[in-house]
Image 1: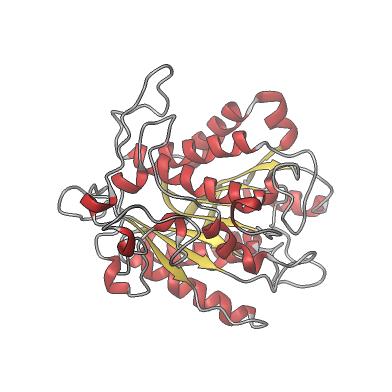
Image 2: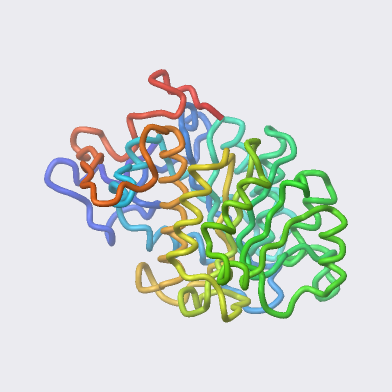
Length: 359
């Protein structure tokens, strides 16, 4: 395990622009043995060979890490997930350019190592085809899962531009293979002009729930998410976020932008609440096509905050005595100093003091 902050421990704190690039300055490892006792592991899936429009999502994981900042207590919850949970950066899956089948196999193997260790994988994409190996890796341990899917598009067509293997088809393939339970599958934020009516006919036949963007506007994100939580229930669920669910004003760096989407605030709240209210066994953030570096890229910036919010929700779920929001209350910052904690791996564990993971 490599702590990217260790050189700065004697004299101060590491600046974001220096040292090894990991998500939120987390300890880094590629050794599966280091996953023992870990609660959450960040995994990069840098591939975009299966996009139907603009490429660039292969640079997403690196950009999200660069924009991730440094850990601290969440101001609304008062929880520092990096102190409450044991979180590491497990690096990138060994993808191969121009060979999407082998890249998917590499992603499934890398994510599978996290799941087999009893940890929750949070995967940084990459085009949205990565959802297929991500979820397959989770179902190998957990069995068929529910799915909460934030997206402008269903990504559930049987083919996209004549190709069955595409970022527009992973959800179709996952449902048809039995990896995702269609009765526990909810899509949120759909809008625009794709896919064809026949795809929605197939979804209705399978029992998939589609919640469109106009419902988010009319009912509010809280009511829409409450419906999704009721449908998904208490069993294992995967959360998949395509960044184009956001309005391009908030996330212009994506391959298939669609105007009229969610605000960053709506999506961040929804991700944190999903992490807290649902039994999340894995999550991914996909389709970030960065155009700048670090926090200058607003799409990578909001993607990194999605991961922060999911982690805050997961940490809050393991501390049910703490509400997700305490209006008007000042919270103690839960972060330990680097010098005293030996880095940012939390001393708390979702499995208790012995470090045994709950999931």
